[in-house]
Image 1 (tube, rainbow, N blue to C red):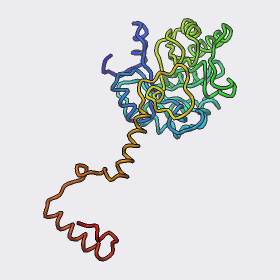
Image 2 (image 1 turned 135 degrees about the horizontal axis):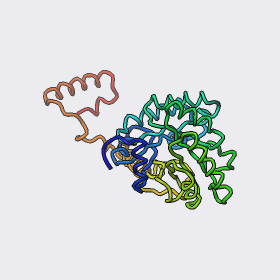
Image 3 (image 1 turned 120 degrees about the vertical axis):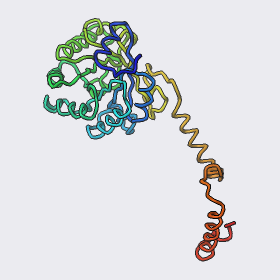
Image 4 (image 1 turned 90 degrees about the vertical axis):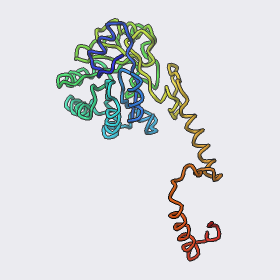
Length: 296
């Protein structure tokens, strides 16, 4: 792991050496800074921000305006990692021109690439974006923007026929110029079959180990996601949400008990200046304050 900026060539070299790429979401400047310092290869500014950051029930409610705020914040913090912006619902589906304009906005905001959901039905969108010089990652398997069609959060590719359809979609994305595809919520063998059918990079989130790298949602990894969804593939590496709640409870107790702020949390001034201010307070308190008797 070096300090130079990660590029598509870097990712291809990782695959050639048999090394896994590390992929994680971030939606704000501090998180992007921390994971970048940790040496991750890619950061996804996911439309999952709708749920992780904005408290929405799914990803469909977040739009370009909100996503661009998250994208700009992350790009300020990511010095090494390749940043992928997640095109939100209806920011690319309506037309090729809409897709190019949306993707172009992400690139102008600092993204190195964009991601969009779907296979053969969005091939023209992917080709239009790549023809415009924009690096595109596809997303297959469980595609949250199509939850209604999928019938909810369900594992995909559980039969050979289903896997072959996904593999055909991946091949179509490759033909359209996508540099990679993300597979979500698929059995390990199914994801392996897809990865073997294409020449582009294949990453997974809940798709087993037989892919070129792994994506996790940072809030899942850190224990800060507020909600009921906890997929089987989630592994908690920390419980920061629990620590935040504990710290807030201790802070509230100290404030209510008068333990905070203590003397060490206050700014000191020269003794003579402090005496003058105390005297002025006594005058003010004697005239208009109900706290006059409490002053030293």
